[in-house]
Length: 335
Image (cartoon, rainbow, N blue to C red; front, side):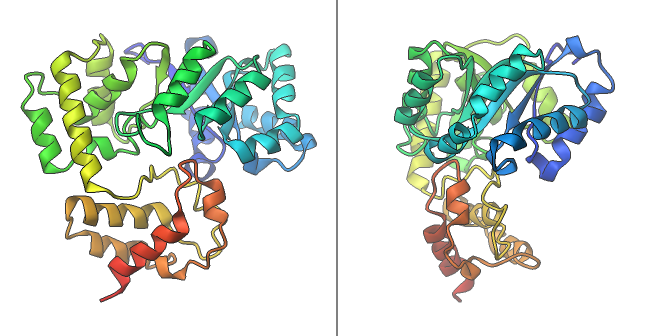
């Protein structure tokens, strides 16, 4: 706040329900309401019918200790979730909340193909902002379709909020060969800075969200974003080289959003197990076996999966989780 960064993003399910509480205690209780912008979301898991939406929204206001949200997003929209929101008239209710002054702007966060996004924007031209996954690894990813989705936002003149600019932290924790590429540049900046500046350098980017975990990361982000400078040609070339290196390593494109964990009947900590798998496959991390044992001490193992499909329904990346869990089991449980 002191450095001039006053945009905050939350949702009811983040941090097992503690994110909204933290906003209320750390932000709303300490600063005048007009001094910051707060985004919250309507998540499909928390309402079954139209009548559930308003009580849920009012509880969000109460928990975050504010009288309105600057932005209220229809959360994690994809083809299936959009149908649920349509059935419950969620978009119409959001507009009513805006008329009442409880929401200033209505938008969506999105995880699906460019085709689905265009359908939503055509049917709801009142949408004011779109939050998308956007980073240099997913720009040409056939599943995420970062480039195509971004182009649809530009086509319909919607400001873009970027999520996952570091792809769940993966673009800040690079393998040795990739680090060497960035280390050779004269800028001598953090690996995270190149990824965040990459996303910010595109036209129409309204906000770039960085999931910071400690004060050191906050200070690093401030250092290159306070007086933002677009990527130079040599930095763009370095990012392309790093992208090529990472593509050759393979791995599971999980961003550790943890949407898959909720409702798993075997309580499998899927993102943690995928993280172990990627560390072993991409970085040859000898510690990954140790961490696999830690993550499965009190939670399910990959081989415990019964193939119910609950996780795949909730996955924003549309990962074939069930098949990947079989791969993980072969790597860590077959000795």
